[in-house]
Amino acid sequence: MAEMEYESVVLVKQEVFVYKIPPRQSNRSYRAADWNLAEPIWTGRLRMVAKGKSLCVKLEDKTSGTLFANCPIESYPGVAIEAVSDSSRYFVLRIQDDNGRTASIGLGFGDRSDSFDMNVALQDHFKWVKNEEKIEKEKVEPKQQLDLGFKEGETIKINMKITKKDGSEASSRLSSKKTGAGGLLPPPPGGNKVTLPQAGSPAHQPAAAGGQTEWGEFTSAGLHNANSEPAAQTATPSKANANWVQF
Image (cartoon, rainbow, N blue to C red; front, top):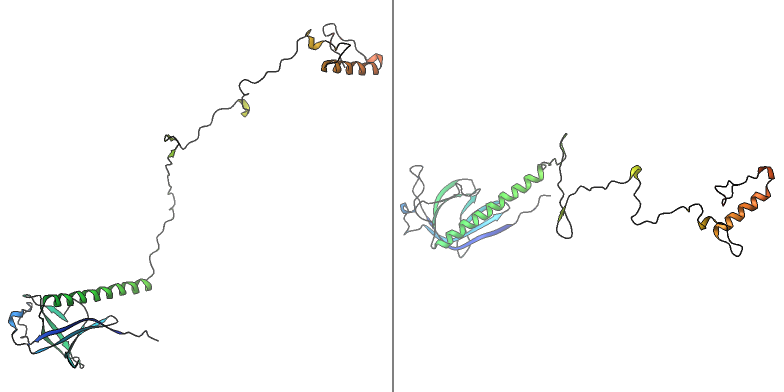
């Protein structure tokens, strides 16, 4: 079912004047001075009515509303309504009857603001028609899709700018410190070094009879193991290392 179109009144002017105009002698524009402006052939009301995209000017009786003339308008500016060359208050309308026959008449307004209002109403209507046609065209024709992908061989380069908390800039490349050989970290500074005890130092002496130290316990354990094995397998410690027990 087709969508119903409703008539809407675009403009109403309560008093307009209609004139009989002489035939155009050449291609030059109409001039209102060639009309008999003092004696209009009709006076009445103007109504501009829109139905969908179509627009027409109706000249009606002010009291009864009887239609005097109808002027369908397909475009503006166009042949349906033409402005005269010597005044902004007068126009030439091409009216049409029910049988399709056309004739040209002169139309005049008593005030310039009335003619200005008619120009604005005509321009607004056909501007709306143009926008509607553009929207309908976009619905039918598919929009061209933008190809934002990378072509073969194309690359992209990004420059990063890193700002520290103190406001200074730092390079985006991270520098790494060299480590020790084999990827091992160097020892921490100030580390405690382990010193081996020297021969003849008190640490090499066996524990006194009255008490034991760690070395004394180690020595006594060694002596116990030595005494438990056969005599043939027991070795006498060398003189250089008299304080050590050989297993």
